[in-house]
Image (cartoon, rainbow, N blue to C red):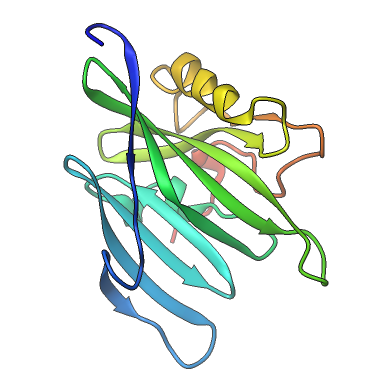
Length: 177
C-alpha cells in the first residue's frame, strides 16, 4: 500500500537459520546468535540464565533493546513482525514468553521496538492477554516509534495483569557495559 503502514514477518530458528557468534559455556550462558532479519536489519539473540536478550539493526548487540530483558525467565519467540512505512522499517514487534511462577506458569508480552538506524529501543509493552493485543502493538508502533527518543523517553504499557517486570527507564539510565 503506497504511503501507508504495512507489516512483514520474518522467522528465526537459533539452531537452523541463525549463526553462532559467541559460543555458550558449560554454566549459564547459552550463547549469542546472529539471525537474518528484514533487509539489512540483523537480529541478534543472546541467552543467559534462561533469559533472552534481543537487539535489532546493523549494531544489534550494542543497542538499548539488547541490554533489556524481563526479570523472570523468558524466551523471545519467532516470528518478528516488522512495521514499515513506504517500505521502510521503523519498528519491530516480538512476542515473548515470560515465566510467572516456580511451577512453569507463563504469560506473553508483545514488545514494540523502535528502529533508529544503529539504535533500537523498547517503546511499548502489550500484555498478550490485553484485548486485541496484536492490533494494540501495531497501533503503538505506528503512533510512537518514529518520534520516540531512545535516550530520553520511557516505554509505556498496555496491560490488565500489571507491569511487565522489566526496567522501564529510558536508555540513558541503563548501566553501560
